[in-house]
Image (cartoon, rainbow, N blue to C red; front, top):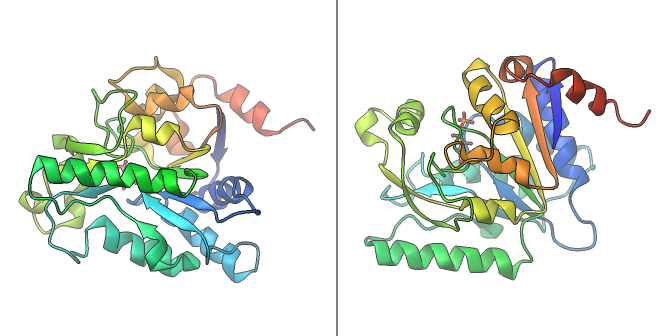
Length: 258
Ligand code: F6R
């Protein structure tokens, strides 16, 4: 695991964008795994800047969202399909018809489960995710894999934790408007991506980051599966990194071979 601690949130966006761009193939259509939420916004802005400076091109890329709420009406502005159209497709020029989001519109568990299986199949059809962009929940969730999620899980319906609904209430008028369920890529699905780039800023994430990076590998901290992946990059600000105990080593290692 590579851990990069940056002095400002802007630098977090830049370093995370560099880690994403470095892992994209140039001999086939790139496949990006996309997180929503506040954490990756600076990274998406930096990817947009790379496009405008001619350093990147997402016009033939595919995007796959990590998760989607269940039960929001089609076109709801806080549905992750709409969020990613606004925050990624428009910003980096990823064609809307290449943006894939789990289907949260099923009315029964069987319909939602069939949609989740089809989503896994679509990821396989395009050759798998090259870089999965991630945030982390204050409770250690990854995607919407809440504490207790199976480490080998695949895309499926999950109940949102009370903490997640409270944290996400800022995007809705009232807490009651926050959906109770979602369809999320599983931890096993996320592990299949060739590189994982997780962005975290702010002291509210410090406990989750320390537990994920330095605690035991456990379903109680779903983000601890990052330790299992051979190519994980964590890009943090000082506040999110403040509880890491092995910090000096990470800073030394980030200097590279020079
Ligand atoms: C979003 C997602 C979540 C968020 C996490 C952090 O698609 O899957 O895991 O990354 O809840 O959210 P923010 O970045 O808003 O703090």
